[in-house]
Length: 87
Image (cartoon, rainbow, N blue to C red; front, side):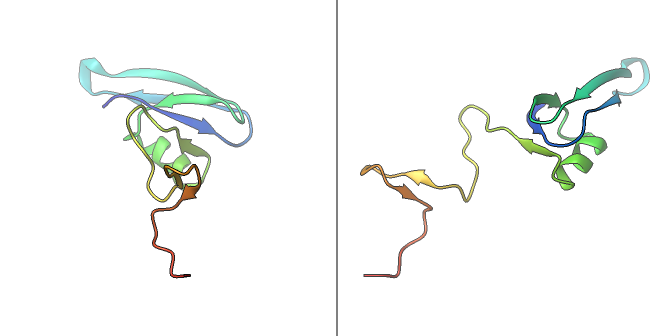
């Protein structure tokens, strides 16, 4: 699977990720600095752990739109996609 871009939030750190199996196995060093973008494999257990802890936030990729975020309407106002029950 292709790497995903994330923003890291936390203390400066580093990790060696083991990827692949057999002859394809390799180790990749990743340096983590607060507020910086980092590319990591989204299916790796360590990546999943950092996401669950709130340390990694996925960056929006081209052509995707996160769910639940406000979108601009034709009038330029923000809309969450929910119908307003007020008259």
